[in-house]
Image 1 (cartoon, rainbow, N blue to C red):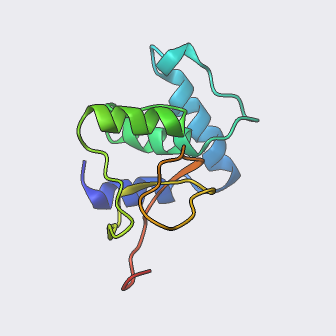
Image 2: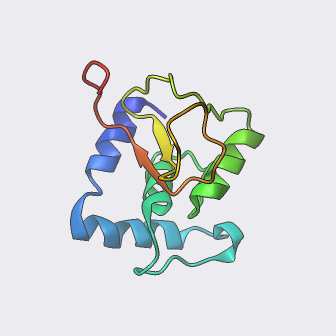
Image 3: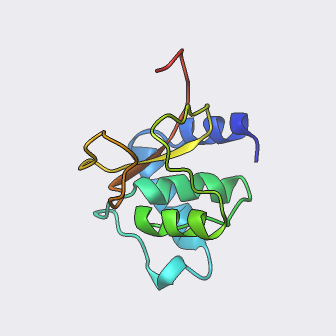
Length: 122
């Protein structure tokens, strides 16, 4: 999976029509992770990242839960918890809104997203 493909895919899933498409893509996979069908009223950030993975034929971390995404990344030896990490376009990042900002976070993630652009340190 190439970074430019990830960025192009996530940009193509923007807006209300993107939300519907995300749910269709995610819920069409068989079997569903943990057997759960995502509803339109559920938080759908992890589902969106998973739809990007599915559309790019990379299904290793497909999940509708931020916590489960982290567990899968840890099990694969890919998890990086480093406040000094400088992401690149196409990277997947997770957020813990309760993180103090001091030291590496030990809490549970609340949100996941894909970096679409990096400008300096922003």
